[in-house]
Image 1 (tube, rainbow, N blue to C red):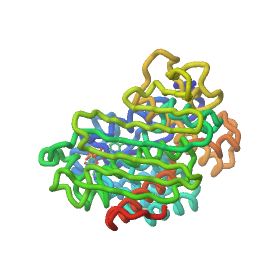
Image 2: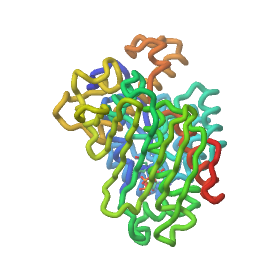
Image 3: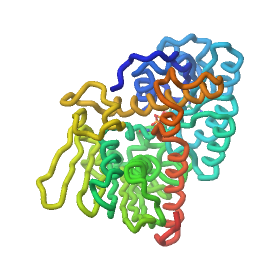
Length: 400
Ligand code: NAD
């Protein structure tokens, strides 16, 4: 069970981006601070340096440690005895690669937003740099901390569904059914190829539920085909709707629907895994429940925080408040940040040769600690590359 009690010094942590009015900055800070494992001490929060300084000061930071840009943040912090150890990057997509690379070169653990880069080659470069320096690289698939997704993973792995036959994934909201980019800066950059990258909804939404499918089933994608379009025509060449068919190496098949024009829908982020004996289904608007449907039996709704969930798994040990109370988005993010902290503390311990007993984890447990890492980021970018190749070539099947 997670609570705020631990014997670890909080990691000295900074943010790049996530400034005033940003969509996702607050979620990072709320999640990182939740268990007292990170302490925000510095940042380059905003493209507008003065607004960023004022924002950081209002968060309680020393104004001297609210920097005008990421280069001066990394340079100045490296000269301090109490300089930062980790940084989260919550800027628009086009900046992720350069900022992440600079952070790694400055010896910092990195948590970067998704999609982590524009190309697989860039993401592989980040992985190599992190590995060479013994640094942790997390990619912020924040929904992946939901406990019932980990229950789903445990049930697939223990064979309760039998062999997996189908994986249906979707993240299809309706908030951009009209050209809201005319008034919304967040929608504007998301629909601009120079900032968003080669995709819009596939990268913005599809990568989240794709990662859920990957870590729940452990299946490897063999090939895919993608059909994408912009129903709001001015968004072309980027898509506001996409459908992907997938074939997995074990013969299973899958589908992924990403959309921002699913009018009337709030999120519709769902995954259904169908096995030869049973199916499970999860929906992020009801994240504390997991449907478990055994062929020929009444439907069961499994509830978060209950003793019948997978023992010793993330489904149980991420529990914070017990069954019956609602946990949600912020807890999911905090669960991810909690594991980033443990992985970073482990990396620091390795570097200092101090052992890992103080983390309450053996070397082996630390090695197998789950968190969305750079490999998850790379696979997300590979999804996007393959989808673009398929849709640009009359929707042909593309090897993954
Ligand atoms: P946003 O436009 O709302 O905010 C971006 C922030 O970054 C702003 O404060 C801006 O001033 C700042 N910024 C931009 N460039 C900067 C730079 N070079 N240096 C310092 N600050 C800079 O964007 P957002 O919606 O918060 O998205 C940011 C990232 O987070 C994107 O990659 C997006 O895909 C991702 N995101 C992820 C989730 C999730 O669930 N994990 C949700 C929303 C957004």
